[in-house]
Structure formats: C-alpha cells, structure tokens
Amino acid sequence: MSKILLFNPKAANGKFRIPNSILSIAASIEGKYEWVVVDGNREPDPLGKIESYLNTGEFRYLGFTVMPGPQLRQSIPFAKAIKEKFPHTIMIWGGYFPSSHPKIILDSGYVDFIINGPGDHAFPLLIDALENNTPYEFIRNIIYRAGTEMVKTPKEDLFEQETLPPLPYNKINEFYDIGKHYLGKTYLGTKTLAYHSSIGCPFTCSFCAVVPIFEARWKAKSAQTVYKDIKYIKDKWGANAIEFHDNNFFVSEKRTVEFSKLIAPEKMQWWGMARIDTMDKFTDKSLETIREGGCKIIFFGAESGNNLILEQLDKGGTQTGDQIIRFAERLKKFDIIPEYSFVLGTPAPTPEQVQAQIDFEIDFIKQVKAVNPRTEIVLYTYSPVPTEGSTLYKQVQAAGFKYPQVLEDWISPAWENFDMRKNPLTPWLTPEMIDKIRDFEVVLNGVYPTVTDIRLNMIKRKAIQMVAGLRYKASLYKYPYEIKLLQKVWKYRQPEIQGF
Image (cartoon, rainbow, N blue to C red; front, side, top):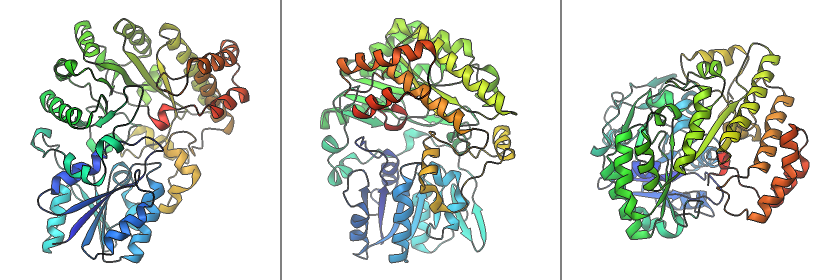
C-alpha cells in the first residue's frame, strides 16, 4: 500500500502554528494509510525533506494545502520540481487557491487533482479509488482533467463536525514538537494555540474567498468538544492562549457563551473573527461572559462605513456605517478590543468617484478612532475574488481586470502583493490612489501603533505617536518618510500580514 506525504508550505516568517488544515486531512486517513507531514515553516530545506521521502519509493501521493499569497512561493516551484523528478507521483492540491483557480492549476500539468472545499471525505475516497483502480468521477468535492476537459464534481453537503475524527496531535508531535514549534508567543500569551472550531460562514459577501467554497454554509463543533481539545493541548503542551482561525467563530451566541463559561477557569486569553451585526445582537450579559471567559480581542470585517459600498460588497445582514461606530463604542465597557478591517479602493464608474470613496473611508476610520481609540484598524486594498455570478466580479471584469494565465506568474512580486491585498493590479486604482491609502496607513499606525506588537515598548510607542500626531490632526498623509523610517528600524508588525 502506497504512503502519503502531506505538505504545509511556508506561510509566514516567525509565526508558526499547528497546520490544522493539513492535519485534518491526516485525521481522515489515520489508521488506514501511512502518512508523514513536511512543514515548510519548520524545515530549513523542505524540498530536500520531501525528496528524501520520495527517494524511498514508498510514497505515491502528495497532498499540498495552498492558500493565496506566501504559500505559493513554495507550492508552485516545489510541485513542478517534484513532478519532473518523480513523474509517477500523484499531486493533490487543496485550499482556497486551487478551489478558486482550478483551471490554471490543472493546465500547469503538474497537479493531478484538486480538492474543492473540505477534504475530510473527498481525500480518503480519492486515495481509495486510485489505490484500487476504481472510478472516482462520483466522488464529490474534486476537480480533475479528463482528456482536454476539466471535470468539477458536485459539492458535498457540509458534514457535522462532531462526526469527524479528532486531529492526530500526538502523531504530528512525532514530526514537530508541538510545545516547542507550534505554540507561539503573541499579545495573547506566551504559548498561543491555533484552533479551528467550525468551517464556513452563513453569509455571502462578494469579496470573500470563503463564499465560493462554502456557499453560505456553516457547521461547528460543540462548545464541549472545543473545550476538551483545548484543555488537552493546554495540559499536555502548556498552551495558555488561543487564536480561533474560524471564518466566523461567533455565529451562535449560545455556543459562544457556553464555551466562554467552560474555558473561564483555564485563564486563557483568546481571539476570534465575527460580524458586527451578529455580535451587536448579543446581550450585554453574553458580552460580559465572553470577556470573563478570556476573550481579549475580536476581528470584525467592517469593510466600509459607506452603506452603498456595503451593498456593493453584498455584505448581507444588517450592517451599516452607523452601527460600525456604535458597536465600537459599545465594546469599550466590556474591555474587549474590536479589530476592524476596512477594504479601500472598490470599483466605481469614474476615477473621481473611486477617490471620493477612499477619502470617505479615511474620514470614517478617524471617526471610529474618536469614539474608541483602542479599536485596531486593519487596512486592505480591494482585491477581486472569482465569485461566479457576483455582480461585483462582473464589474471588475468589465473594467479590464484579469488574473494571470500561467500558474508561475502568481509568484511574481506584484501578484503576491495582490494576494496580500496590499498592491492589487486593478485598473481603476491609480498609483496616486494606492499611495494615499498606504500613506494614511503609515500615519494611522504611527498615531495608534497596534497593541498586538509585543516588541514595541512604551518609549518607542510615544516617540512614533509624537512624530505622527501632527500629520494625523492636519490630515497630511503624503510622503510620511520619517514615520516609515521609525517603523522600519523598529520592525513594526502589521497584523494584516503577520498576524499577532
């Protein structure tokens, strides 16, 4: 029976977490197929490590998990090199990037199959079919080539998370010491655990890569299961803080409150992602319980203070600009830090309208800061997401936007920045517009350095705030070289790129 190699490409510098996505695939084949993990974040020579396994002749299947952005740097050249040197191997990619861009990946010639969405069922079924030389065209959630045609099988209904096997923490600990390699020092704690408690999101925002994959569906583990898993890792490896990497952790008020009560005695601080209009419906008592349970900071997709843009983004729900400001102020009394992300540079009929929208958002962000200065602000520049049928995506295509036509082009510096939503190649944004967004970001981060940068001491904070304060008050954002210099010298940390 052939063995399986699972690869987690490097995603960040100095921020290493348990590779939950690849570990969920490992869980699906545990006890049935032998598997190994190669983590690009932890290996000095990951390609060499992969080849050392393949040289044994025991491994036929390679599973890559691929997010847009940094993970492409290893995924694309490694997959190409492996296929050339070991043509008998079967390459299977999963993750947001291949699910969103299947044609260009299959056209490359070195990826054989794509797992389109969750692979907990699809991956082991595909391996079974390939091992036994049986048909695989009826397996849901896969994409492959049949001659010159690309075949995309139907989506599988989201399955109950409680039915899935537990992640094989003890097994991955044999490859990489969890306590040493995967519990990082962050603003939340000295040994921060990354955990997924749910998949999907029940909303259909047209700018979000989650939507085409999960199609407004959401399934979660119970509060008891989440607590049990976290308690196990805390007791065995010393975890003392949690990052919930769910797309939307706070969908259910009942589940969130129940978990908060269970985790409170463990004295662990934690962070997760939510929607403003969802959590604004939570009672004060629930918010108090969540804070008492250790919740320190919550990431919210504010996106825009302009109600027309919120409608353009198909934000769904009931979120408005007034609510964004009101909720930031509301959270002050619960000592929960709201982390608001904004998307600037959405398309408009004329350049003047695009510029006016950018100016509006800058003024709006300053209003949010005025009512709650502790609000963390994360700025993104709008990057199109290939959501089929989306009015917004049709707009950007009509404006002349196109994705790369060759897979290797995705690892050019320009397109990597595109995936990080820092410098998109969008035809309606002029260089001057992008400069204004970036310059405002520099000044804003100078006046309000992120609380999550644990390396920036009080003296440095006061110094950079003093330098940036005059610019901020006078709305003078152009050429903030003196602030950029301090941020470069002090290696200022940007949460939107580096996390905590």
